[in-house]
Structure formats: C-alpha cells, structure tokens
Length: 180
Image (tube, rainbow, N blue to C red; front, side, top):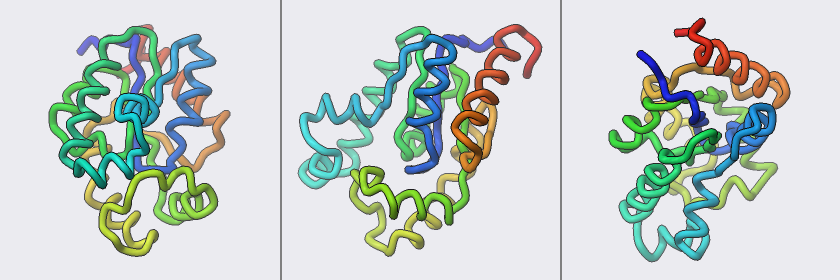
C-alpha cells in the first residue's frame, strides 16, 4: 500500500510526549507542526475543559474530528493528536492515510508526567476517578485502537532525541520504498 507520506500523525494518551516529539520531528524534516488540541482551543475560543463543560464530550469529539479533517488536507505536516482521537472510526480512517506513530507509554510514566505538569491536565477527567486509576482504565480501553491505527509503535519513555531520530528513520525508510 502506498502511503501519502507528507503527513505524520502522533497518537497516544495524554502526556506520552506527542507534542514535544512532534516538534522535534517537524524541525528535522522541515515540516510544519500542528498540535490538534491547540487548533481546537483556537476554534473553540476557550479551554477544552470549559468547552466540554458547556457543550459535552460529543460536541468536543465533533470539533476534534473537524480539526483532524482540516489538518489532513495539509501537506508536509506533523500533527500531535489528542489522546482520544482514536475513539471515532472516521478519525482512525484519516490516521491510516498518513504515517501514524503510536508513542506507547506505561501507566506509571504517564501518571508521573501528568502529576508534574498540570498543563497536561487541561482536559476534564474522563472518569472522575483518581489519576492513576483513570490513566490505567483509559489506556486499557484505547490500547488496541492506538496499536491498530499506527504505522509504527515506539516507546514514549525513550529520550526526545532518540524518539524523533527513530521516527524520522522509519518515515524515510517507508518514503524511500524500503519499509512496510
């Protein structure tokens, strides 16, 4: 299958490193970088938690899909996708049209990162449960969706430099017809 390789999507749960790694990959490849959550914030005109509070999760997921469709029309881009992007089949179909990287990260690492950096908590709780329990449950629910959507799976626990270099290498292998 020939992939349109002008698009790289990074998927995985909150705090797995999609935005940080995405910026590094985009810089290396000289692609434009987009964080889908930042685009959503711009379009919503408020924080995601506020949008969800007033409009609900379904409306948020609708906006998330609209943003992904918009970004998928751009070329030479790296897109850091929101953690829940894979909960809708239509989003998975878009992800499969590009080079999609799942930053697989263990629960303990995610909880540590979310505890240290409250910016990662910009979205409201999905379950209302304690952080570690919520992260574990959400990751269990979405693991197969992330894995099945990905062109490649990498460890989100690796260094930013190592991750970005590995992603660029895999991308170039496929782009040059030497990969999958």
